[in-house]
Length: 517
Picture 1 (cartoon, rainbow, N blue to C red):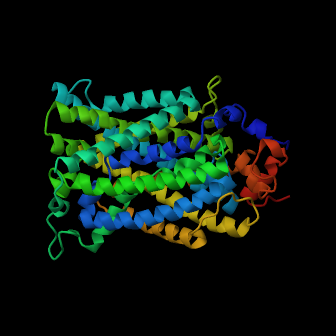
Picture 2: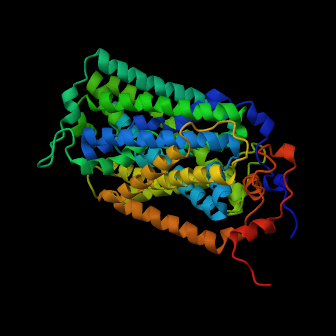
Picture 3: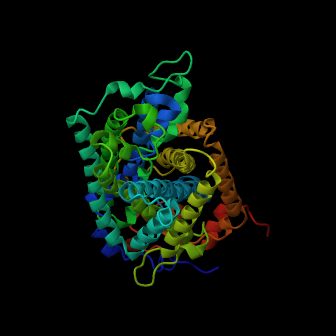
């Protein structure tokens, strides 16, 4: 069997020299924060209904510890293995093709489902704003149409090119943070905050107002606490586009997480402590919109503020579309996914097939949940909650696998160049991985969203079956595969080190059972 060189495997991929001019520290920071910031606009609040204010607060502290352990690990691995495969490449080098595929598939599920969660809230919020401003509650003003419009527009912008993507991401992330900051200041200046509203959910018999569901309520609140941070780990996907990967990626990851922690704390306290408090905010599909109405009153003013608030949702929606495009592309480029998904645009050099395919799946999933749940009350909140749980399912599996990869890489490849080293090391990765497993189990404890989790599990298992039957026999020599096969002996600077010397048959040997003579 002949060689497949790095250049052939990556034919049509991005012009690296051009890209490196655009992925500096602030672009990477905005990419990480922008991917997550919609979590402060909606979704998190359903944790109040699941566990009360105290349950969500404790869950938030635990999950924050997990994310710091995870992000310190990622900050070390991403400049050491700076490939667009991100989490998949970490596990591939640490655990072989099976580990790489399981991690990549879980992360791909997370990144394809998460925009569906975000666009769900965008569609319902757009519908409510139009109703408030014009009274139109039918025909074209339907969440279904809004979802289609948002997917078409923002998948299209991502196809236009990565330079536009990074510039747009910086602007819209800063605007989203500004909107949240404006809300926080308005709540405090207008005296709208009432601490008694934090704990106004009637407690179950024998429980307190702080933990109205008891200690058991902490566990179903964990997935909603994850929503404050979910997708910050996408930054390694931009490694091949980073100007100074050894310096900027770790800094952007950790400063981005710290930014999110600050805003999560302010959102949890200030958005819960207005209007109808935890009891009302905990079941809302648009908690920030309800917060604006509590501060400024009903009417045009609040609706216009909510319209501006769409910016926060757009920031995450747009940015995570970038993530699933790169993740799908990298897995397809290496043969783990069907190779048609790695076709790039003839002039824009962007993975347009992967971007469109992820958009179609996300939109179809949103429609499926919408029509299945249409007969039930509180449709908007149930759709957001169900999709959120499904996204978290993929996320926590990938988190555990990345923490395991970190531990194994420390032992398996101790001598590869590591521009940054995690200050919490292996113990930090162990703690983060253990919390991720607890969060995975917690997904099955909420009866309202369990069917969606089961459906996601079935999809995950089908993906594993596909790889066992077909995918593992179709691997291609991509940069991630080359690095893993050579145990990093060429370093990470692919074009400078003469990549392309390993045969595809060697990859097949590693990923397949021994063949008889």
